[in-house]
Amino acid sequence: MAANRQLSDADISAIIEMALSDHTSFATIEQEYGLSDSDVKSLMRRTLKPSSYRTWRKRVRQFGDRRENYK
Image (cartoon, rainbow, N blue to C red; front, side, top):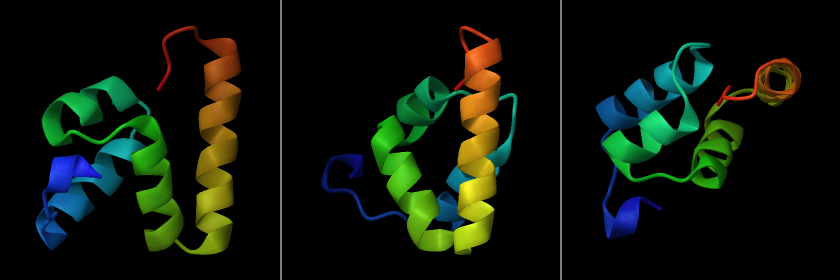
């Protein structure tokens, strides 16, 4: 994760905010923080409540089915 870089609490908070946003792609998060989409998903799974994580993943999947370049 993040090429051996420790993420600060502020970084984690920013990544979560970006991941929850419908306007920020996984590619943008990877550019800024060096985390792949699977790294972001793992971070979200560890950080969010289980029900919040499931809701987020469902939304990402649904939007991804409708839009070619979503997340």
